[in-house]
Image (cartoon, rainbow, N blue to C red; front, top):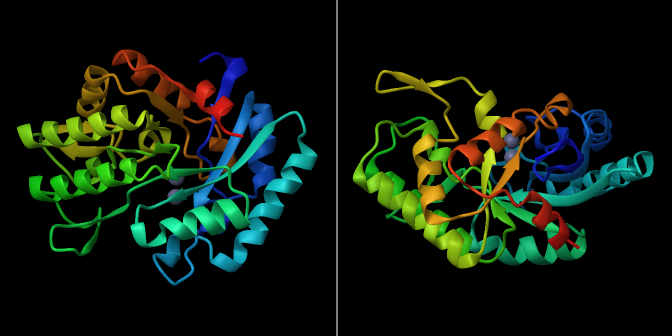
Length: 268
Ligand SMILES: [Zn+2]
Ligand SMILES: [Zn+2]
């Protein structure tokens, strides 16, 4: 992607309790770093207390909206789009659609699986254990259901299971292939996530690798012909474009088409 089309749909704000800065701070950096389209996709609030330590509260939505509007007034040269990053839980699909998009005017949702429902019907996070092939299967099934829900513009870090999965098996390949096939069928891009490239490397069978993205995952993406969105997943204003050029390299290395521009045109 050349400098004139730096487009990022994955930006957080201080409201999620683990990022810094107001929308205006991200926009100032975006202008400085040659970003032309900046989408905000902070972690969604819920109408109930749920995973509330890493997201805004519902009554902070007006702050989010007003912060983005203030940034628009300050930086009219930048196209600023308001979205939201959401887990997949069918119980809240209507909340995402009616409240986030309807009431508050979010233009898009990013799907992101940080927790999945396992085969026993229990919600399970990604951290604190070594993921087995069975866990990975459950994660993949949950991701496929998210893709098929039609709620999301793209899936963020579809290979985030790399934080807890070590080694690689035929089952891992099968799981990744199913995620990819679902994305192709839904004509939905998958995200190459720059934040994963800024995190501490993980020791995996004697070698150090990013926690995510995963080379093996993106090899399969290339084979299956899935399209990609590249994102910084910025949690600090300075990172508004950080590692996104690296994500472009990942796409090229695996023959994956980047569709940030097409997606930007699609959002109203
Ligand atoms: Zn975050
Ligand atoms: Zn994010």
